[in-house]
Image (cartoon, rainbow, N blue to C red):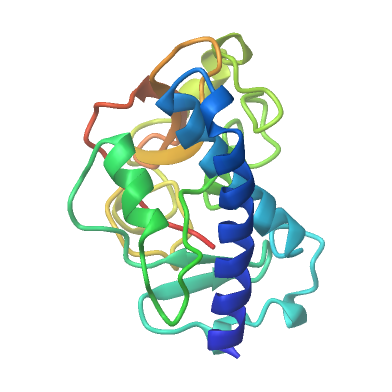
Length: 214
């Protein structure tokens, strides 16, 4: 089953990357190509039906099927790398690390979108999924942010060590990369910081946490 799923998603990603390659010469920069590849991975995930919170837990496969080094959230049907990478890295290295990760028999790992990473936040209503912070995959410009996205008191969350994160996941509370770029600020990406549950954007050159998803 794992090998079949891995082959399916791997082939789907390669299919999208082949399509993107055909228009690569028309893209204005390598940055656009990187973002297009990230978008392709998201399209594959969405087309699989495994990112919807309405997906019945019984069809996720998951907690039982998950291999070592993973944890599956049966509410969203997302499988997370667990624990996250020990070393901290800039965004480009984080993107590559997830894009090339082979874990638990799967090869379709990627950086999570902002909405996906917010889905594992807990204990800070404003920045958890559906909270008053309006930065989402549908609104990624810097102007979408407000003071409500600054999160809550540092290290006062319900998770281990005061993290504002699902207790099932292993790792520190440091700020973590998403695949969601800030359209109006070149070379910055959205992040979620699980120490204070903030949703903020930072330069891609920063070295912070990486946790892959599929």
